[in-house]
Image 1 (cartoon, rainbow, N blue to C red):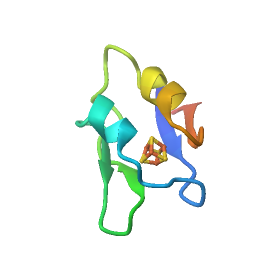
Image 2 (cartoon, rainbow, N blue to C red):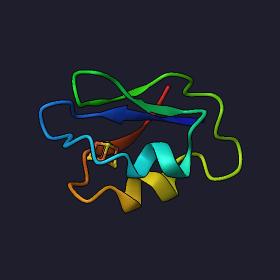
Image 3 (cartoon, helix red, strand yellow):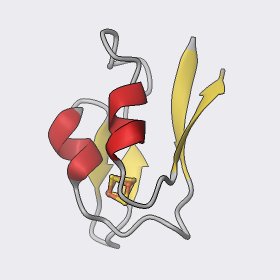
Image 4 (cartoon, rainbow, N blue to C red):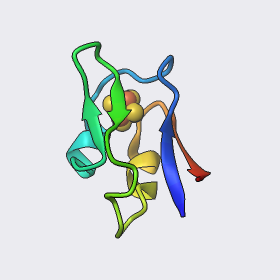
Length: 63
Ligand code: SF4
């Protein structure tokens, strides 16, 4: 199973990933999105959120 990994330098904290997969991503106080539960997004495996990220900073990697 692939899990999302965020490039924190590139993340702009737009919240798109959190809006799509709120159980997986959470934008924290520092304005960066963090993976809070990589296993939670069973249906899309977070690829949809990765594709929707405006700066393409979500990579899907094998565990
Ligand atoms: S969609 Fe991309 S830029 Fe926006 S908060 Fe998520 S990881 Fe960051």
